Figure (tube, rainbow, N blue to C red):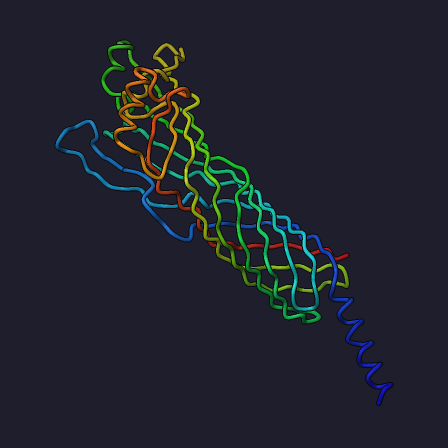
Length: 300
């Protein structure tokens, strides 16, 4: 009886040791919007008072392609700890648009972000084909949202003042911006299958959900140019505020009206600059996604 217990203990210990160990798991993910919210306005006939057709553009900033790398340790055959890194190359998203006939003023956003995700891994522990689940937190540690605004009629952007400044006409308007967010915390969950190729290598596929909302910290217009009829390019950044856009904006959960008025008086004509940023409230931006992931695990 004692010998049988020793043999059973040896077999269990050997199986546990075999299941334990570090692993590296590179992969790739496709991220599609999980929820949709209003990103901006869509206005037709915007230069014809009384004939405007107002609408909204809905979507999410989170979609794109993720380049993934996980470092983990299996505590046993069924449980492990995982630290995931992901660099997301976001897709180009239309956020706002105004049109007048064939004339347009369109704004787009493309997000790039690096996230860290500590997680718990639960694995069925099957020898060949094994279901698994992963539950964890999601922390964006770096990134920004790049904005692009394009128009073939600058009047749609800054108003009729453009005709006074450039009486010979403007062929194109183009602006670029950078938005950066505050510290945010999300969560992620995924379910998938792992196929054991050999003792050290396995391939995996999973579907998952990421819940993430990022609050904006700053917004900066880095470039605003018009292309004149003779091909010359001139900056119109100083007059961009005439169209309701400022060169530099800071965001807060709430803005006290009296403090804002004092800030604007002190800023004078410099309101909306880095020295005297425009102040705005921010409710956060949706980055939640459904994820389809493929990867390979190399165990040590």
